[in-house]
Image (cartoon, rainbow, N blue to C red; front, side, top):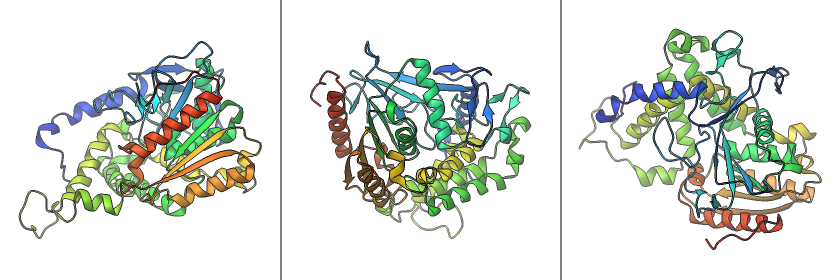
Length: 404
């Protein structure tokens, strides 16, 4: 694949990739390591010893440690929700929402964000060193699920001395984790904010993920998942996977507004297969920049975790059973132009919560930004989040916050 990274940035790419490799085992964030005597029992039926979890915290815990909010990241996110990413130098992925005076106010709340199990920014994943042989796990890493990710986060909270969370919040795959938290640990979750998500992955979404995985595995440099040992990376396959996935994060309206059918740095078509259109150049750049910071095998593992997610299946096929007797307060948010997790997915969760007798509110936000709207500047989302957390905090006995 031709690289469409700007010339002045091309020399930085090897350095970015080297930084990303360093983050796998020795991240620039807090780390907790659990020994062989504290293995994580996985849904795959095996135990994972020597678990490492990388995390960031923002704000300070109060004396009772009752002001904690867990922020869960989406597919290719990480623990750096509200601080510059140590690999790319870019702002945290949720700085619009998390920070002093933000809807998730770090002057008021103690915010925790961890890299998910199977990730590549310091939490145990396929790129991590397997203590059994000193080599990267590769495909020897057991396949993980959303519930495994949540159980690992529970171990982290135990380590931090957090018995109960004021709120668990997240969008997309992060929203799946929120729902799993509410189902698995209802006594530890006072309120839950699942955004742009669903209680199961649809057949269409599984299909998109499979296309991405096949692109990675078809790259000759994937080498059966052993590419790190061979000193190569399946850049081309992973870039194509990212390009395909990135389309699903946007909407037709967003793509038209950003690019339309405008040509890229030329007056006329080339009548070839270069990136004639701006949207082509944009997607190629997205693919090329992604491969520098993200591990290919992690992409396989985390997409598979999303595919396996079906909360109702664990409760006799009845989603309401997952929340039976729950005292957790819920607020669900969807976006009108999100076709990856459309509003009907959120409504299905709302109906299940109503059937279980849970406290639930729901908002559908008018937006043309597609699935990625939860990561962008959406004032209505900010207002909803602030209002929901203020209400939850008052009910939880926390002092009132300042006016937003």
